[in-house]
Image (cartoon, rainbow over all chains, first blue to last red; front, side, top):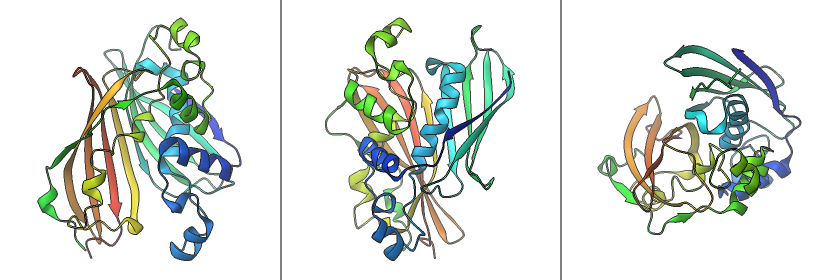
Length: 129
Length: 149
């Protein structure tokens, strides 16, 4: 198996963004306060934390390779994620050497826009198939 | 306003250790919708070969900026939080984080560069146990839009 595609969230709820604010301690009002997000920041609505998307996408890596085998995980935040978004992550093994897989991943919204691109390195054990 | 380059290379250690709890890990796993039992159930984690409940890979975000928080909000530094977006995040893991770990985070303002009208700020954080064991290294890249204009 060299590629995995999975929907990591369907119809993202505002409640989940609030849960992430509480769990992470990131209370920037851009993420939770509709009047601030729209009237002061000028956004269409509240924006999900980039780290929420990185967390959602990370599950694809840990389910595939095993948590303890993830050596490195990097993400770039390319476009905002909004309530109602459905995100699909595709992860590919781009190279394999000395028992380590190099992985590229991308998270796209329903319109096909990449909201996150990332890379990771994972130890590959005999159980990773 | 451009960021104050005098802050480059300054390091800030968390004043008290961050104590990783099972409850916080469970809360974090729920927030990212991850039902893996090693994040929720001690027996499942032990059965999988871990000493205790494991923290998800992005869990260190909770405390990785804590040491530098004071510096970033120092008026002398010149960071306008209303214009800040998270550009990039990196984690390198030396070992998983477990419930019960007592972690010290030392954050260094490692890079400040202007790209067009924006300022790119990189904060590197070294996370160790109170015993000095290396656990994780994180890089937060923060973009201040219009900061270099």
